[in-house]
Structure formats: C-alpha cells, structure tokens
Image (tube, helix red, strand yellow):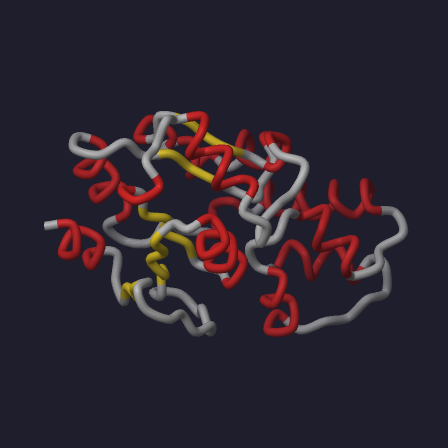
Length: 184
C-alpha cells in the first residue's frame, strides 16, 4: 500500500493507507482503473519500482516458510495471486517460497480476476484439485468472495490488518500456526 500511495501521489491523488487498503487483493491494473488513473502503465511502473526498491522493508509473516515446508510434504499447494508474473519475479522474498508450490495462477492466466472465481477455477482445473478437498487461504475480502463463488472452503489469514467478516463453513485463522492445527 505504501508503494501504491507513493505512485498515485505523483498523479496528485492523496489517499490514506487505510483508504487504499480497500484495494488490497486486487490486481494492480484493476486498482489503478478504479482509482481513475489515466496513465495506468506509467503509474503501475512507479508502484512496482517502489516495491522493488523497498522489498527489504517487507517481511514474510513468522512461521510461514516452516508451515509451507511442512504442508508441501503432505499436501498439494499452489499459489493463486492477483499479482502478475513481473510482480512475482521482482519479489525476492516471495521467490524463496515458490519451491513449495506445484504451480502458480497469476493475473495473466485468466481474463477475469478476483473477486471473480475464474483464477480459483483455473487452479482447480490446472492442478486437478477436487473442489470438496480444496482449501483456499487468503487475506482479502476479494479472496473470500472468489472462494465462496467457486465453492471452495476459505480460511481467512487474519493475522494482519484484515477487517472483513466471513461466515460458516469458512474459518478465521488468527495465526499461521492455526493452519496446522486445523489440518491435524
């Protein structure tokens, strides 16, 4: 969100981080369209360059690498993200986690994007997952909406500033360790 704030301020748009958090989970292009940015490509480049140049300021939540390592030995894991491949490529912290995933569905892989279920349906089909046995862990209301529409059980990664409500049969996880507790 800091990168988005930096980029749109160059377009004389001033929004707080809280206001911008409403876009958390959407593809960067969609976010910029909704903010009515005229020069989307240039602003997107500013945003991406900011993140690329400040990547050391961001951290992976505690225990996530260990949890992914444990899960990848027993479960098929894939990543469904609103990021494009370029955004994944320059995120060196995310790159260290990619070996735990059998595949990735990115922005370019579908014509429709979260909150539409298309990216999740693409993952089900591409990786031959059974919808009844699939769990989608996400941290945005758009993840939740996409999972609900796809008929996939959703686990809310509630350990950040994620203020949205989910309903049963979906689950609210308070810490990353809760993933292991539920699956055991």
